[in-house]
Structure formats: structure tokens, C-alpha cells
Length: 230
Image (cartoon, rainbow, N blue to C red; front, side):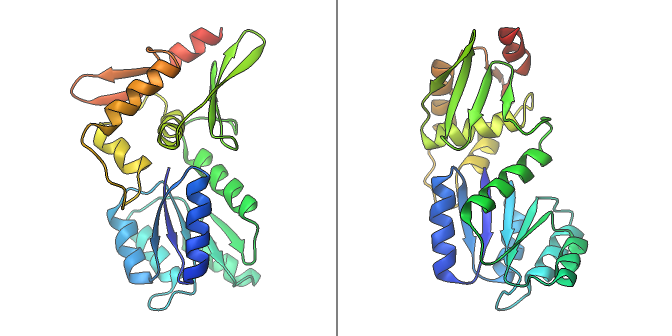
């Protein structure tokens, strides 16, 4: 999942960026409203954390710009402004959730996960289809075998890639699309990197789980997972 963190307090931004990356997010950071407005408009983020008290343009105005321009990316407002009327104003501007400072990182991560699942075509809170599920806390995959779940260790990129595909089952996605959603802006990306990780996931799971549509891209075959589970 690719995340935009908009926070002008540099120490907090660095701390959150490090922690969120450790939790399996590809994180880009912005420290001003003008940069945030541009990045949110031009990059395909899956979720955004937005501070309101930015030095040039307020976070509220940035959010209004995004929504007016048709950007529907889930936005969680993270701010020291905790008055009820300010929360109402944020929700009216298009926020999806609101978390006041100070906060616990665990709560932030759980709220982000909930927003991502809410925006996904998959139903339910558990990130599972048939015999396959992803344990987000441990960042592993699990495959159901009769009456138990077998753990499958994943690298950071494998985890982000599989989680993204589980959130969008059946959707055909090009290699370039997947790169945009599992890597942050500063990562060095080789042209065939997604092909390599798709191959690794197939070996760890089952070759038929992730299918190739020639000339179009890859998709997670939910029917195979459900049939295997039955």
C-alpha cells in the first residue's frame, strides 16, 4: 500500500514514516500544503494522512482541492485540533477519519487498515479469500490446510504486493500499476521487478493463484482460492 504522509513537524514525520514503513506501507512524505496538493493529485496513493496545521496552505484547503478535483483517496486527518466543530468541518471537507494528537501508533495503523478495507471491493474485516489470508500484524501469508493454517514467510515487497492484490481480487493490473502501489517515490525500481516478485509469490503459494493476462497484466484469481478452500 502506498501512503502519503503530510506532516510539517519533521521529527514526527520521520518517526511516523519509519514506523509505517516497518508496518508494510510504502511512504512518501510532504511537509507543506502546496507540495501535498500536487503529490496527492499526481501520484496514485492508496491512503493519505493529513495534518491540518501546515505552514503555507491549510490541510483543510488541500483536502477541499483534492475532493473538488475528483481525488477520492481515503484521507485520515491527524491534528492537534480536537474541538468537535473542527472535526465536523474536516468531515464536511471530505475526510474519512480523524485522529487527534497525541495518539498511539497502534491506533493509527488500525484506523488505516480499516479505511483501506472499507475502500476495497472485498467484504469483511479479515484480509482473506478462501484458503489464503494475510496476517497484517506479522506481515505473513497463511494457507489453510485442513484444520490448520500454514505460515508463509514474506519479504517486505512480497507482503505489500500480496496485500494489495488481496484487496483488489480479480482486477487486472499492469506491472507499472503494481509498482506505483508497492514502492514509494524514492525507491529504485528495475523494469522487471514485479515479474520477479510475482514469480516468487507463485512458488510460495500456488501457481494458479496469481494469473497473467497476456498484454494486460496480473490478477488474483479468487475462484481458485475459494475452490481450494471448499
